[in-house]
Length: 138
Image (tube, rainbow, N blue to C red; front, side, top):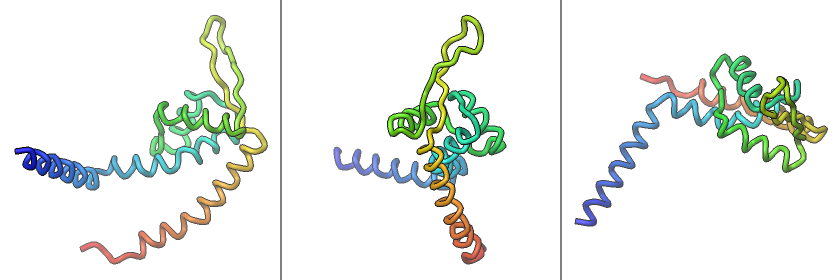
């Protein structure tokens, strides 16, 4: 009986994986995960920003295509700050409003953005070529 349960569990896992691979949102989320740190650096390279502002800006510049969740943004911001790529300050925009953490790239952060941008720019043509020059689908 236990072996049947394990087998059934594995079949369910395989079916879930098969469904995920045919779900466009699965692939978009993988792309989003890969681009998020670059896009956060991009936004902060233009102007200091708080988490909500970063998400709104990413919505605008990607036309809603690559918008990470707050649960993704804040760990990236913490990491950038901890490693010295960003500095954080508090800002109170409205009287009585909650303090906002505003992130600003340091010179090291600007260098990191330039490096990331160079890596992506040099890689994207090859990815595009590999995908587009494959065998046609029938």
